[in-house]
Image (tube, rainbow, N blue to C red; front, top):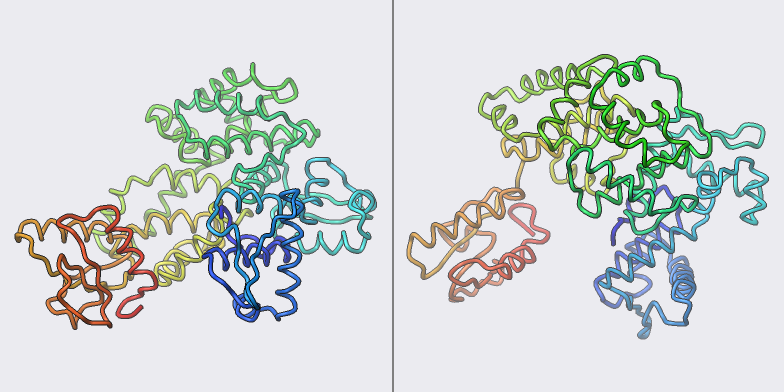
Length: 486
């Protein structure tokens, strides 16, 4: 599914457990309620309630009486297992009908502000609304949500609110739902295309949708008359910047009348520069670099200071040269701008699941990056994901499990050497590959002719050259391998 349960852990408990159950049952296998209870850390009665409630939700979603689960004796099987489109549409529907989402929709889209109005609209008690807002406060921390005399307020700077809403809605839907219902989608698409033309980039459909979310968040808050803070130093620098002035001239004619002010366009422009894709054209990248080198941004000072600290921590000239050869400058520069503008926005757009996996696989590297970014928030900083992404490409800084392959073929030595090179290249990001001399000293056996019988060593029969099917089979074989054991 397009979003992991882990990313919904603090959103709403019922949605989190529903998605977790769907994840567990997505292998098309039969499960007893006791097995599901153990995996979800619930009691059996709670699992039964969850199965019943999900079935009701599915009936509402399909507007039919189609079953979601097949029951065989005391076991259940998910009938839409591995049906990605159906699962994703159902997941969107689950989120949209959750109390948390409906509450946020009233607050953000319909601009309702009082606890009483929210209570009346949702047919829930005021105490329930207060409790739900308190639960959501962790997810909405950068917005600084507060309740004063029965009124719900976002106390964060307006620029932060605009960015965070685009990130938050994207994280929930990934383009599979248009949450900005007050705004027509087609004019937003037109603005998105014009922005791409200005930066001379052609975004893939997913990135284009994400850009639409960002534009929509800006326009929504503007039309609701939420004013941006006056940042005279920032706006003064932008007003003197040739790239921004060109941007404003090109975008202003297609913007709604209410979004043609210099400050509104400048705020959107800076938000765009937190994304690496707008640095793709070298001449434009040079102009962006020139802007970000000036006060109040001074992004290049931050990047240079971080480079100096990183070179010292790596303490190896060859490894440092490899880091520079990765050409990640614009990825890191845009990340530093993001951190400069929004230091309070913690999670990465890719969500928690990906970084959780990486930090588990590479705890020493994660600790290295956290220490590197100690003054920027450590592992909580948006920069953590960016530096981790780059540094995990350096084998010298990672602790990859050693995979011992026993390769036995009838191929000429030259062809066997090519085969070894292909395997090294294919597995380089995840394993340190060595080729064992005996079967007993290996973790996996690859052979062109199955002549060994050893139940303890997983074996894959291959052809003269590795085809896509061979790679998939090898990946399946290596699932769960962590070095020396599966």
